Length: 118
Image (cartoon, rainbow, N blue to C red; front, side, top):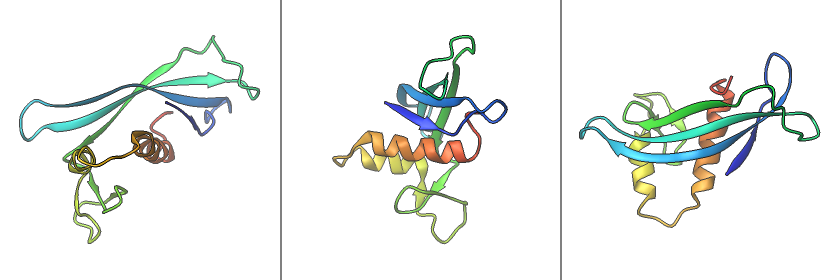
């Protein structure tokens, strides 16, 4: 799965993120998480890869410290819209037929808006 994200803020290069791995795990019953491992790659405007800039790894975690609304959108803890943790939301989806790329895309969009790939 490859997603276009915002241009690199300093030089304006086009960027894409590629899902390298999705890991579901926990060390104990409190520290549970779903980790999404991404590789950020840089491109010219015509989609030619820029090989002199090394790709960058970024890990996004869905865990018990982030709260979401009924649609999985991240909200502040204590918000009236907060219904469950992001980890619980991902686990709930495992019991339903879903398109995982839709969920990953929403996480990428959220992270990009916060500059997590910079």
